[in-house]
Image (cartoon, rainbow, N blue to C red; front, side):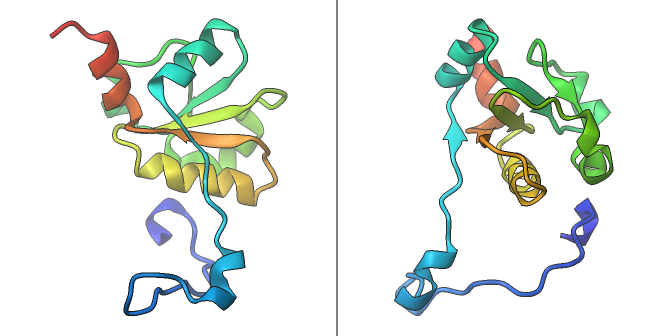
Length: 131
């Protein structure tokens, strides 16, 4: 977490031996919404979404999703003011892992209606680049 500027973690939740959160902790876990490529296409077509690309500049050389605001994950915390509000926010990285962290960071900073792109840019490219 420190690598992305999140060095104030107070702890973490663990699961029991059965792989399930203890019942008394279940209320602390909030499922994070995810957006599919198909859902993102519809949102983009309706101009009803803010898309944030948290990949590093070198990764963006392989392609981008039109209209995405480029803010690398490592800079997100100090560039929060550059994230447009007023529409749902979808965050994407290359494969969907870092974007879940970024979406969580945005929600923790008070942003609402934030999700991440399931499968990231790779899923987008698979759906839009001829084989």
